[in-house]
Length: 210
Image 1 (cartoon, helix red, strand yellow):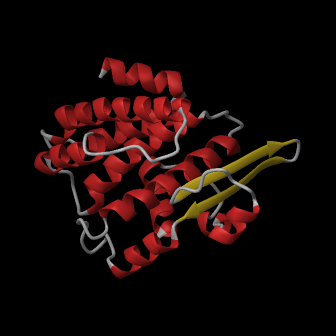
Image 2: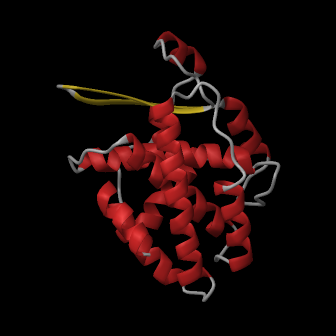
């Protein structure tokens, strides 16, 4: 599932990371040995030193098992949607970080979260075929209105998630209005590829303009 998601995101954005997400997966035992303070169901661990980046991705094993039993490629519904969003977020973080690092570009935590929120909307919208306006509106409500923050977040983390969520909500509404409602999915994909390549400031400027 994670490899398929990576392939899908790289095809969507026409990028190449030259790294396989499955090679960077860590399990709960290794994460515990690393002494991580918080242990959410999805987590990208990153350290940076003179030798470069060290990256590990944790995704809850029960979520992956559920996705194997209820493949979103067959049907995306309440049986698998939550776990699918978890997987998309983890893979989105991994792909964006490694792609930016490959091009020697810095990336902030807010930038990772914002791109992941956009990726979740677009991936779910296109998962069962071309986007539809009715599905888009329902998906936006599910992603950006019907959510709650995880326990244990500090105030800076809450602010980061709140800003990422609000901006992704505005941008997805703009994509729906300008592209989905009028059937211009190819136009939406072209803009998303441009959005992906912008730094955080450019992304926020584009959202304000849209």
